[in-house]
Amino acid sequence: MPSEKRHFLSSSYINSLKANLRIYLRIVGLLRPHWGSSLGAVLCLGLSTGLSLIVPWLLAWVVDVGVREGSLTDLLVAAGAIFGTSALRGLFAYGQGYWSQAISNLVAYDLRNRLYAHLQTLDFAFHDESETGQLMSRMSIDIEAVRNFYPMGLFRALIAIITFAATSVILLILDWRLALVTLISVPILLALAAQVSRRLRPLWNKIQNEVGDLGTIMQESLSGVRVVKAFAREDFEIEKYETQNLKLRELNMSAMRLSAWNQPLMVLALNVITVIVIWVGGAAVVHRQLSLGTLVAVTQYIFLLGTPVRSFGFMVNWFLRGLSGGIRIFSVLDREPEITDAPNAKTLQNIAGHVSFEHVSFSYANGIEVLHDVTIDARPGQVIALLGTTGSGKSTLLHLLPRFYDVTKGRITLDGMDVRDVTLASLRRSIGLVLQDVFLFNATIRDNIAYGAAHATDEEVIAAAKIARLHDFICTLPDGYSTWVGERGVTLSGGQKQRVAIARTLLLNPRILVLDDSTSSVDMETEYLIQQALDAVMHGRTTFVVASRVRTIKHADQILVIEDGRIVEQGDHATLIKNGGSYARLYDLQLREQEEVEEQMLAISEQEMLLDGPEQPEERGREVLR
Ligand SMILES: Nc1ncnc2c1ncn2[C@@H]1O[C@H](COP(=O)(O)OP(=O)(O)OP(=O)(O)O)[C@@H](O)[C@H]1O
Image 1 (cartoon, protein in one colour):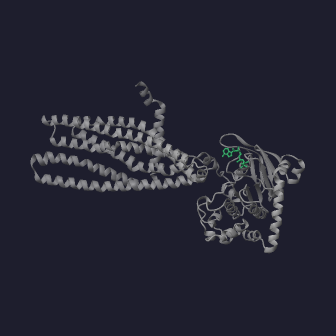
Image 2: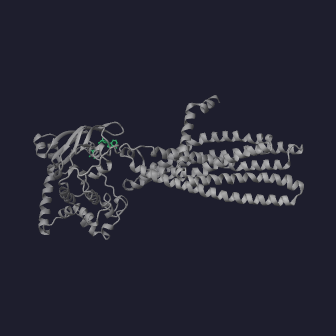
Image 3: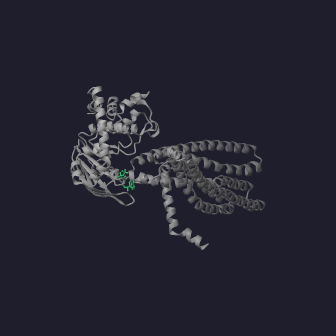
């Protein structure tokens, strides 16, 4: 037992109590914008509880005055008063119920919007370490836990406190000895509640985390359903889900078992007190030290105490669930985005597109440096091709330019301005990105192309689609540009998705283009067409392109060969071939053969163009986009 005592009084226990109290205060603080309705709910709660406390007084009066003295008029008045009080009580109870539900829904609405908006502001580093399922469960289950905390936890607790406080005072006035006997229940009930919540609290924490994990498993297996099926791993996925579900069931059962014990224990404590009161009070009535009416009133008050006591376990549950939900929600809301606008950030306007990486090094959150002392000087309009083995750091390098991550050392400048000194919105508007993983929204092709330029006209959308060599394909679809592409663009092929992504970027008409392997998943013919189109749009724009294709590489102004996060060779095609280093070897191994195939394609395409006439789609498109 001494260890228990130490535990109760230990500074870590007190600190955790303080931390929990702060969370509760923050949850209650969420009511601030709805203070009018909250005040209404609390007033109604106070009035309905107060009125319910008047009824035993009236009963005492009925017994002592009406019944004892045989006055029918008094009995009638008392009956009327009891009826009136009960009716009013019902009215206020309705008001309390209505307002408490209303404010809890309003808070849930606010929280959902706040959390969602906040998630949008958080940077790549946060999303790298977060699981979608966990975030989804914060948006749903945790917010629900906080929502229910108000009516089921907070307001019930207020009712309990008012009932206990008022009953104590009334009992003291009626008979202090019986009051003492009754109020012994308070510390017993509090001790029971503290004991149970200490054991329930970690359980609810775990349950809410496990629900998140269950969500992650579900989300992963649904979005990766093709991989699951391709590898015939359905049974494995089912088992994984069932195991997690079982874990959750066991935890829920433990929580329920604890809660189930809680309530009868409390009711038992209250029943014992009632028996003692009737025994002590009955003796006092027999000895004419107490009126029968007072004894009736006292037993009625104990009966009134029964309601909050019976819902005590339930209330404790909602307190703990609200706490766990609050902790998980605030942990996201308190996470400050690391990549934000500097206080005096300038807006980029009419930039020329001069990009410099100056001795840039970078490590992800795990601290391992993946880029070392990278220096690049891309003059406006130049095409910079990045070449390197997988994992050498090409994508990472490109992600630093729009500040998806900030450099660890060195700096990146755009027209001489450090990218950290300009607004994120204007920086990202100046850079058109086609990333490795093309993501399309469950919307029409048109809306996907116009995603970054919501006000683009149909003509502009079509022009971009033409440049991306997508227009002809779209015209073959029954719904044309209004065709829904399904979740993540599931109804389109890899190459089509990439061309939508290219069109989407072109529509922004950015000064700087970042193309990360944008042509890797298309067939040779499509790729050739896209390359042609890209050549056209790259014109006049500073372009960084992760390229494995000879045509892009050969025409690049600078080729950067990257190995293990370092630039090991830099120069144009002719220079690098002359140097006879890594690039020359790579060219001989991979690119020369490709070049021959492309030359054949070019010859075929030129012949076709002569037959089709001189007008080229990208030329038409470029006119519109200008
Ligand atoms: N979010 C991340 N957190 C931690 N490490 C990462 C992250 N993304 C990439 N890395 C690591 O950084 C290194 C460079 O990866 P990067 O994706 O930039 O390579 P890459 O050259 O683009 O490769 P690929 O050609 O295969 O796309 C790799 O070792 C990779 O494991």
